[in-house]
Amino acid sequence: MAKHNDENLIESTYEELTEFENFFVNNWKTIIVCGGLIVVLVVLGLQSKSLYEKYNLKAASVLSSAETVEEIESALKKYPYHKTADFARLRLAALYFSNQNYDKSLALLEIIFKKAKVPALSAQAALNYATVLAETGKLAESAEKYSEIAQNKKYPFEFRLRARISGAILYNKLGKNSLAKNLLDLDTEEERNQARNHTEYQKIYNLLSSI
Image (cartoon, rainbow, N blue to C red; front, top):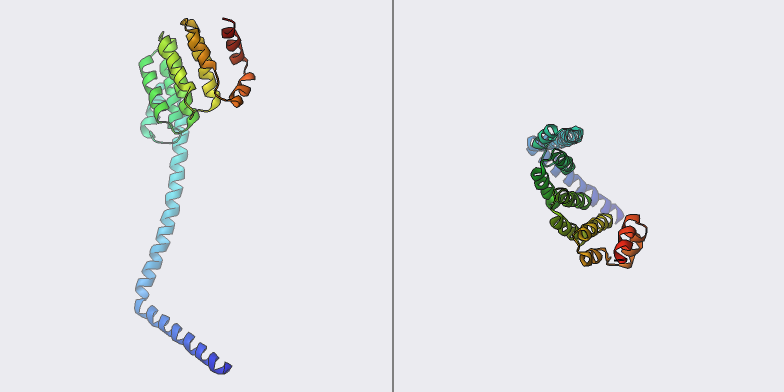
């Protein structure tokens, strides 16, 4: 009985091998072409990855090494969508500000804090935006912007705390101490514990508490 089963297994295997041989003989050109295409696709995929990595490194190098307004503007024209482009835009906005080109600085900072995907980068751009407003005499607008940043939960706590401090100082200058005090009110016990270790926060908090 076992011998009979072995013979059936051998015969079945032989038939399968024969069918495969017949299929290969009849379709060898297709098989070879398909195999060749797979190899080509793999090679092209590796080359594409290599080309992308070279592009990525080149873009990062150009964007990070640009220093002047002209150099950064040129780099951003070449690589506007690179992941480091917004960092270059932040530097460009700072240069616009130092050159007293305030409108350009504000416009660029607004683009960054509205579109940047990195919360810390968006928060820094928003803080810089509020600072430019204050430096150009728009204290009320600046204070409102700081207040907006302070309430934005998507921003890291350290950025929101800086916004609270700067906004409270401006509200104090504007004679709006109730708004200044409200801005320094933190939402959670954890935030209050973190703020206790912040010298500048404690200084303005104590000052306003005495008024």
